Length: 607
Image 1 (tube, rainbow, N blue to C red):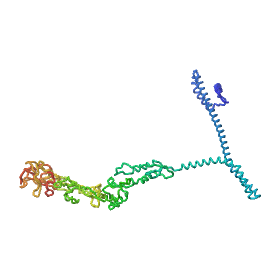
Image 2 (image 1 turned 90 degrees about the vertical axis):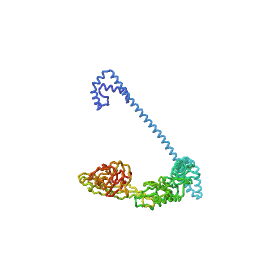
Image 3 (image 1 turned 30 degrees about the horizontal axis):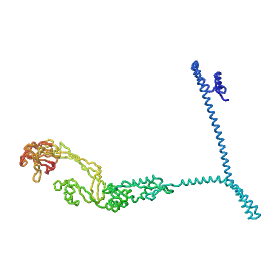
Image 4 (image 1 turned 120 degrees about the vertical axis):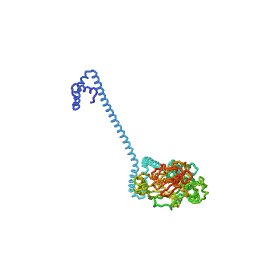
């Protein structure tokens, strides 16, 4: 029995009056929990019951819950009834359709098989009839059999018509499917025509456009005034031909345009296109033959190349730019006007340099107008000359990298020793040469075995040199100390006017002219070994510098030092005068190195 809101409300009221659930419900676990909650919440519930609003709110909430549950139950039942009825309707429709289809298939099968069944049955009857009529003769039996067959065909021919009504649509559908399949299998392509001839077949026009663009990009326009190349095709639909990709179509375009462009080899010299040939392999073989005699496969440090950068580049070139390979080979083996630069060496003269290059001095002068060969300074050492002459168009250049060992000279360090007698020396540490491994690069041109250029590219020290240390004495006989000369001389008369003459075969020193009384300074440190008068030198001083050097100062008006005195470089030792064999105020200055008189001009070339 279905509950209604009225019956549900009665049951709830009964439960409230009796304190027990309605029939069919036991307390169970949830009832125990409910009782526990009511015990804890009892005081609050009793307090709420005293307010009239509580009863109204409780009744409202109860009605909302009850009617909500009731409405939900009704909706679920309604939905289930709808689904059930829809399922029944679908099952009934499916049964009807299945029955119709089954009947149609059964009828069709009967119509299709009826002619054959009747034919089989008729064959049995004809055979039986012929057997019966053989008693009257074979001919009679055959005649009766044919008559029976004709009557059967006439009688059952409509059955064949009904079978054909099923067979013919199926056969037509099969023929249609086969025709569509065959037509769709055809390979429809585009035949590309250029200048009236078919050059190939492509799937789409984009393939030809891409191939044309590729060919245009590959064409080398160097050395021509052409701005671009193009070709205009036409298309026709074709069936069943092999199609080309972009590369194949590009090759076909080239073949059809061979009167305008073609594959060839561009010859570049120093990045400049000088010729185009179709026989690049022949030209390469000739270039290899020019370098082959100089190559050494067993020497990885040898590089053989041309003085010019030669590059062969295969590309597309215009046909009218191609020249015979023989012309290019002749050019490469010929000569051209070139420039050679020569640096003037010590001892060179215009005549020796011109002769070494096989030209006249006038030709050398004409090629170098910046020099005046007729003047004394017109052929300076270190000057660079330009010589124009015929040179091979291509010259072989060999670059060889090699290593060798060389000694490193040791340096000498001098130390002054206060306990060692002045002018004497003592070796404290012997010097030893070092050793270095040097890597050099040499450049040879043509058949020359003499390097034209040598460059040091690396130097590795294998053994450091050992410095030689020499002690030089400072102690004089009287106990004073004197410094040894440095070997670097100063000009003895800074206040001079001019040098009237230098040392020569008839004069022993430099005459330094200066006003009377001008100070004369020690050219270097040392000890005064002579300070007196000489009939020719007049008042003069000789200083021993202790390093193999001695200097002499003569014709002084008076002296400022005495024998045995230690002097330092720059000390005033005398004053300019004209004593002895002299005709004017000056200082006669002489320099000796290891007892040999030397010209002071070696130390003072610009005085």
